[in-house]
Image (cartoon, rainbow, N blue to C red; front, side, top):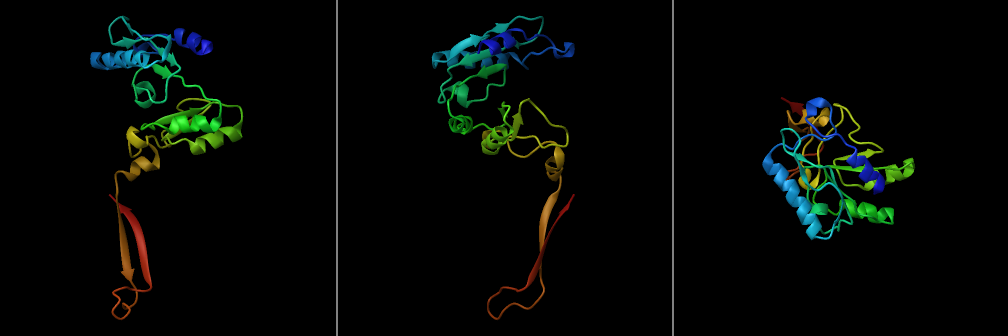
Amino acid sequence: LERVKACVEGLSIGPGRENCDITPLISPKQREGVESACRMALSQGARLVAGGTALSVRSGYFMAPTVFADVAPDSSLFQEEVFGPVLSVTAFDDPIKGIELANDTDQGLAAGVFTRDIDRALWSADRLWAGQVYVNGWYVGGVETPFGGVKKSGYGREKGQEALDGYVQTRNIGIRISQPLSGSGNSEPAVNRSDRYC
């Protein structure tokens, strides 16, 4: 946690056009929501490691990059998306317990695995229920890779072939190639074909 704290406290803050690490939130209402989430985390027993306050940096709605430790799995901070620069840390001893904790939420936009063991990375990625799983990095992928969440984090996909599929209609064409069996109403054999059209 000390390394995370040092990293967070070293982040640059300012407008996005200046190549900063932390940029403003979209509105005063959003900043108030992030501040409220921080207050709620403290009231539910989380330990503040860094940040937790709004910042006055030029113009804009800035929030200090924030880290909480000892975040309980049933707490609001663990269970709800904050949409602000807030990191919650929950410790675990067993990889299976870690996967269970990660999946025990209604959200599922992205998950990350950090390890030097490629077998453990793939084992974890296969078991995480998220739209994206990143290994040893964040937002690895290009325009050709699908993007989207699962559970309450969204449905459908942006980017990639999956996004293009959202612009077409699919249909099935069933063709009877022999007479129905007497009284059955069924046809055997039959041919089915699926196609796409715009």
